[in-house]
Image (tube, rainbow, N blue to C red; front, side):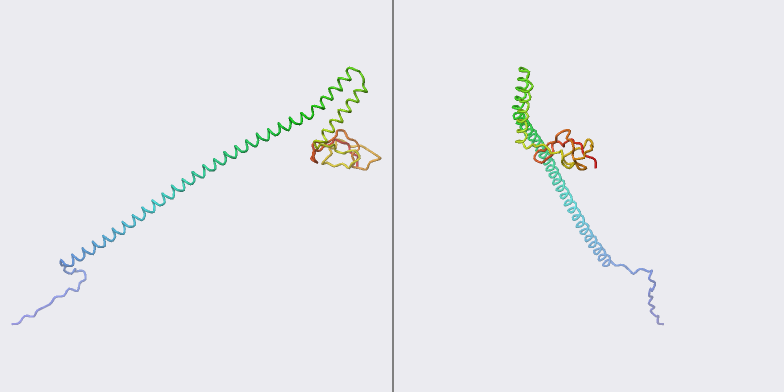
Length: 206
């Protein structure tokens, strides 16, 4: 009596295939290689990040150094400017002192003339002599002003000009046209065409 050989196949995918030692070794080798690759990659990424951080720190330190240097230069420039301004102010004050001293020296002869005229008038009791002395002193003072570039402002009979005249009142006049200086109350002066003091005047009504 013959027996039939029956071959049983397993079509169920849920049933795992037999695992042999060769397959286990290959799988373990592949996983180890992948882990080593991942480790190398992570190590490379970590080294790159560290290098980038170091570079940023170096750039930051360099920026701080340059900022400190710039601040020092600004402070130095400010100090130099303050010293320069202080020197210029002192020089200007010195020039003013010299100019004032020079002006006083030039005016002293005029003072001497006034003193001599008054002294002569007291001794002689002569008003005519006093007037002569005062006229001479006034002429001396006028010459000094002219040599210094100071000249009086012409007012009476001139058209009112607010650049040179300051009106302190109005007056009527049949001889002068409107807005004309009819009376000079106080003389004005200019220094090289620059008004030192405007003339105080009365102006005809318009």
